Image (cartoon, rainbow, N blue to C red; front, side, top):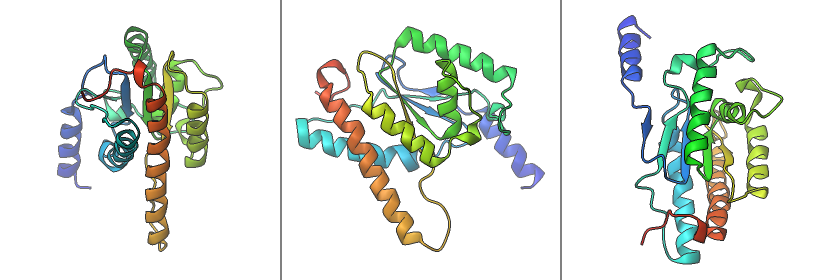
Length: 206
């Protein structure tokens, strides 16, 4: 990357919005600012599966107009790049986010990838602390299963999703199949919990 391209990239990052939507909305998406594309590459196909299941079951859809989306840190340069090192500025971000959670009490905290999920764990002071590189796809997938199994509408539920479900390589057809299955399975499971708790969630299109 040339110095000019790098400077342009840094300028774009610095001008990025920190948050979108309404903090009072029951569903929050937490994103690593280094990977903003997850909102389109991961969330949109999962949401399509959610909407399909919801419509078939209860003949309405989730109103995502005010869906709350937040970069977990204000500057992508804060994202840890070693196994266990977290800077003081990240600790400050964790404290700020903890205050938001206590004030607004969202029902679903949906994160994408390793760093946002470990960030959430530290917000809730879950031990032992893990470096973001600890959370490989299989571990995150297990955590998702646990979150769905123990879902409690009376509390905030941390729901980790993968940041990337397709990797390079020669078995592209298999990877595409995996993507489709992942989106369908995850979307269906999230939809089931929303449907089960439909009367407790103010998220529906009238």
